Amino acid sequence: MRESKLTEMVKGISPAEFRSFGEFLNSPYHNKSRKIIQLYELINFNYTEFDANVITNEKIAKAIFSGEGDKDQNVRTLISSFTALLEDFLQLNELEKNKILGKTLLMKALRERNIFKTFEMISKEIADIQQKDFNKNSDYYYNDLKFKEIALNYHGEDLDLDLDKSYLEMSENTDNLFIVTKLKVLNTVISRRILSGVNIHKSYWAIDNIISHVEKNIEMFEKDHPIIYSEYKILMMVMEPEKNKHFHDLEKHVFLNIQKYNEEELEQVYYSLSNYCVNKIALGDDKFINELYKIHNNFEKSGFYEKNKNLQYTDFIGVIICGLNMKQIKWVEHFFEAYKGNIVHEVKRDTINLSSALIAFYHKKYKECVSFLNNVGYKYTYFYLKSKETLIKAYFELGEIDSMEAVIDAAKHYLKRHKQLLSIHYDRYMLFLNYVTKISRLDKKQKPELKMLMKQLDDNRTTISREWFIEKIIEMK
Image (tube, rainbow, N blue to C red; front, side):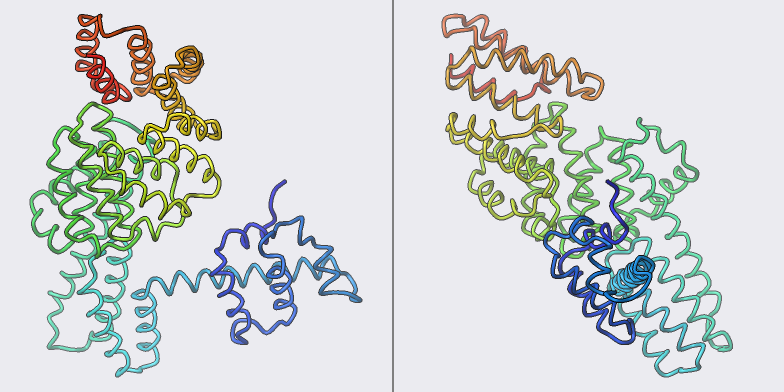
């Protein structure tokens, strides 16, 4: 059943925002209707289980319009007014986040009313804030452009003002707004895989010119326009993945300035750096396991995971796997306990069970590992593949070969049904299943076969759980 606008909006905001909305409604400036307050109180009373079935139009009519005529129309009008005020509240919240835009609009209002002393004071405040702002993104350049435009209109009759310099600054600002917006658009397209291939940028006008311009002035952009520099490096990591220099340049830039990035920009560089490492690791470049751990460790110290109250399952499990690969078990267990409450609710149970299974496997508690895996649902392909991979290894360690072979058979059928979806990962998982079958049928006496298997693993460095296979071969030798 489709949710009503009221239900969707109330469920879409956080409990803290809903409390603040109550304060907003109790201000006579924003709301003078007692019935709006009554509706808020009715929703608040049922907030923890709020949906369209709990608070029906009939329930609203009975609670607020008892004894009044045309209750249906009254309820519809009340709900419409309530959601309109909630929209105003959210709009005001967004404006408060963008302090420069708010102050710029205030400057415009002061200029129109000839309130010049306050105008100049606000103008100085904006200039000071802009000068210190590290996060020079699209909002920054747009706000600065509007600020300079209003300031120029105010100083228009000042013959001592260097207008040429002022207009040149506006022109450069416009260029930077265009550059950062264009780079962000292209990087977003690439990250969502709407298109693919190294030459994706060819479909987007002026990208070659932007790249050339940034490269010619790279030191200036790194120093004075750090977000443009970040976006440029993110793009080049995709366009020239074989050149690790772009990754290392961005990594260094981010680690030096990690406390200066705002949440939005920090998230952008986090996913770009970590995805680059994951792709390199998948292609067999093992040194990027250490790089990935450095990223997770530095971002954890910066408070990135603590602030993120909607951790995705792939991110959370990815951190766990990376830490285990680095044998940083204490760090992994700290991360697990500290941030498991931040996993998105939809897959929290499955994510916690799978992560617990991986940690149990590391501790060689294989029966405990199997127990956790039995409680993992397969809502997404990732859960199925990672669970089966871990289950197969656990059964191998327990010596339960019949159970292991049954899981291998089921996994092969699953892979074949999802071959197109899995792309390059299909071959990686098939290699894993074939090798685990081989190793389960070998013994210490078959040294030539063990040597051959080791060579095959060396040739196929993208194999899933390759390090585990090597460990098992060494044990058998």
